[in-house]
Length: 130
Image (tube, rainbow, N blue to C red):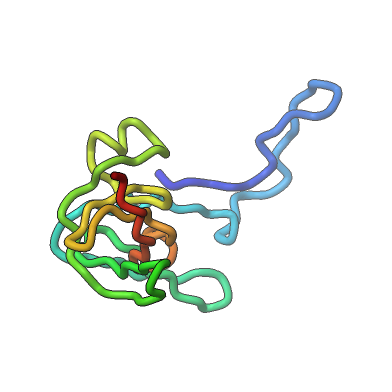
């Protein structure tokens, strides 16, 4: 079973049924979320419309951490997933999405990239609380 983003499943404005006038098309196909987790590096390449290639991160140990005070970026190891505000289930399972707070050797950082769409994990270092 695949995800389908066609629009012919909707009803008419009058509330009546819409009859199918064609079959499903390949360009209407969607994809399941990558659900990136912490682990050995695994990536998946998929062909997209126009011959483009999308790289999805399935699991990763490294992240590019930017420090806003110094302006430097460093590749460091992710220790653990602290919090994922997107979904309480993702929080429990340790899934990394945009907005996830991760713990690294440099400190806590917030993920600003979309690992399932961009193919890498970019994060910004959070200021230390005193």
